[in-house]
Length: 349
Image 1 (cartoon, helix red, strand yellow):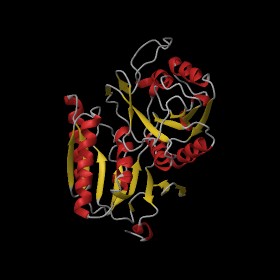
Image 2: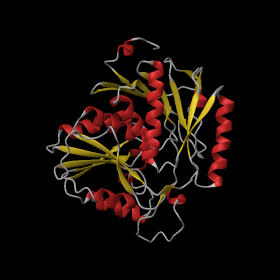
Image 3: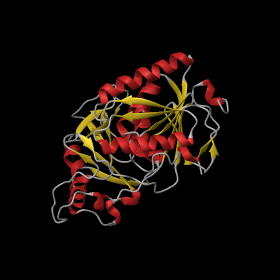
Image 4: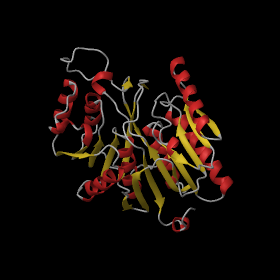
């Protein structure tokens, strides 16, 4: 089933990717992230007939073990696709340098084509910060008329993967990240006029609620909206670390806090909820914080591109833990197109 939403200047669709599907569109760029995660090649392995070479974003590894896993995955991609190239980047936490390199690359590709691009991005193993930046840059600078995103959901056993410690300990623990979190405002997903003391806050949550709590509290919002992943929402009474449970309860005690559960892969649902959140806001601005799933982050990015009052913020830890993640479901395809671009009306363009 295809779900569709008209949002601002865009048409936004999502649906399951069929096994062996031949995508109707022709792409100027096909991009994916090179990773240690087993699920990495799963989505592109389902796609047939891709004629454009695949470019893999390869962030500099921090350990030999991680580098070895990435090189093994590179061979998997090469066995699937006829032409694969590497885009070498600094470590993923060095965002400013990498943003500049990605921007120059897209600008060069646009100049060579002499028209807005059509891009396919497998976001499964591309860090959320870069997914948001790509969407913001591509449409704000009118480099792109269409971005299709593939995503393979994964299973994170947060309790099992947490560093060993007595469960009675209530302190927050890093499960997927390491080191202190820093907030990063995503370029191109900025509010046109932002008033810090007159703003609402909408947060997409994932794991690591204990670390999310102080990160959120820095913003002191007028109104706090929480988007939880429906399948693992704390409100479902599923087993969770005591520190995570306490953090969730503390968030709900915030003045004017409200919670919404949305399925992990429902980016359209998040975009629709974000629009409703803004339509009921009396504040002059809103921060939308992408801590949860990547599909949820896409929904927040579309809301920011559609409403000049919205800025999108992501967290950047000191580093990420190299936890293997296996696919937990079928890949999803998200289609974002500029509905005012003439090529939007030409099938297969």
